[in-house]
Length: 164
Ligand SMILES: Nc1ncnc2c1ncn2[C@@H]1O[C@H](COP(=O)(O)OP(=O)(O)OP(=O)(O)O)[C@@H](O)[C@H]1O
Ligand SMILES: [Mg+2]
Image 1 (cartoon, rainbow, N blue to C red):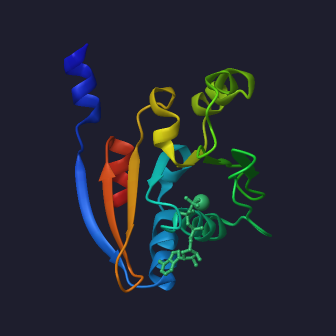
Image 2 (image 1 turned 90 degrees about the vertical axis):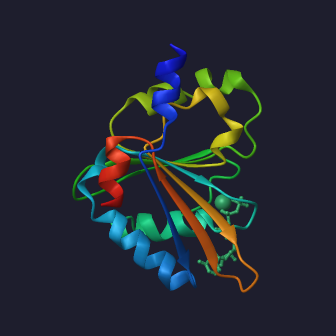
């Protein structure tokens, strides 16, 4: 069991890139949006307050075809979307304010994470053990000149597909 857990958490690919500005964030989001593996992926976003997690998600959802304003789910915890063309379901989570594990059951998060679609998660560390294995972890760090240092870690075959 422990061996399995370690195997699950073993990163398959680690890549370090830099987003010099928001245009580079947008380019990366556009590249990712074209990957077929996005149709059923769990992507976690880590980084301090203001690192640029929601900004990245906005570019990603825009590139996927979500129209209109994309709200930060800081208060609602989750914002759902369905793409008009493909019918793809997308959930954008922000667990920053998550502190009651009962919410996990009552709000139906268990069902969401078990269903097909794309799940994007800000502050995954706040949901801890509730979350299933992530496919791709995107860690964002702000550098002195406002550019972003990004560490991309693929934990599954889906995550590897997203990066190749
Ligand atoms: N690649 C980038 N280059 C320069 N500025 C950026 C970049 N990405 C985001 N920003 C700026 O950083 C600020 C904060 O971004 P954002 O709200 O996306 O952070 P966040 O990580 O979601 O924070 P929180 O943890 O509060 O949800 C925004 O003002 C945005 O314009
Ligand atoms: Mg945010």
